[in-house]
Image 1 (tube, rainbow, N blue to C red):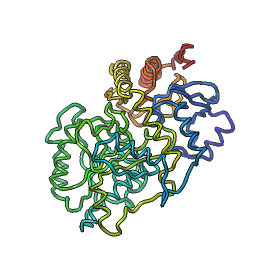
Image 2: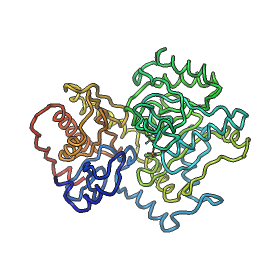
Image 3: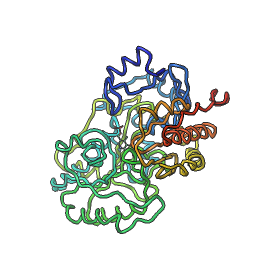
Image 4: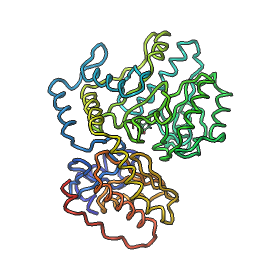
Length: 448
Ligand SMILES: *Cc1c(COP(=O)(O)O)cnc(C)c1O
């Protein structure tokens, strides 16, 4: 196989772990040489249209001149200083921008290193909020089944206990409270059933619950499920009734992905704590932010020890903050809303043929997210190289073939991406069917 022939690739396979992978197992990895716009170029010269935006993050495309420029300028000033006792323009400017873009109540910002850490920070905020008020027994979190919140221990504890990829660690993890995720779809009213378990859980446990944590509107890595805003409105009413905080994990949905700048806007209320990550720096640097309301920060700080207890070494890294600021500036300048809406229209139209295939359970699109849910899990070993042969980068998991392209993807690229998906899904569902030759790409596409 071409993709495993180089000495570098063989070194990689025998010495380097990739996400959820095994060293030495010969799982295919593809060697990227360069990336620009929505195109990845492999070492062997093949080009791929990127349907993944590198896991939701590269919203402006790769190698963007304005992003590159912002980072180069910051490098020439300084790349890092500690955030303990020091501050700098990139952190101040990015926090200002985040406060401006989110709801007026969210005016206190904690910069962390990754999405998982943003979730840890949010959970610690909630626990300290109650401890400061003489309620140290409020240490539990209510979370939805099929949720995904990250890979560190606190974050793992609120991921789906069965399909959350973490069941191996269950006896080490804090035991949290889980309720069924809403069964109603996006755009639908929540049913009594959707909320019954949550209601009972709050009734029985509210004195030991610090917060409810969930991904609003879209459950990402736990199943790519879309659900209605009405559920969130009703959840918020219950949270208020029982006096527990609401944490929204918008690490995947933030910055326009669902068609609103933040998914909580679909529901029309502001969470107590908001986690952001992934697209925050346009995929340039790892950075996340946990936002809360000043009145919550004040409560946290009113108790012992009078401060919020977290502070990573690379907190507020200037390069990462400069990337964040440049990314958010581009987002506003480039009319993300019409771009996302156009992607929604195109994905809806061009993925529709998959609906007709035997073995496809559902095709759904929301904002710049397209999902084909199959009846059986895909065989990654065959489907991944097949996507590459067809000139696209799509990385399915389980029964889900899904895309969340960069917002700058052109109509031609979107059409080619979807055509390749329809073709590869068709091939993979028909047993013993000879592999079709890859789609020829036009010269116009190659120059993008
Ligand atoms: C990706 C993700 C995380 C974890 O972020 P990392 O940067 O991978 O640590 C947490 N929550 C949600 C909803 C995510 O999509």
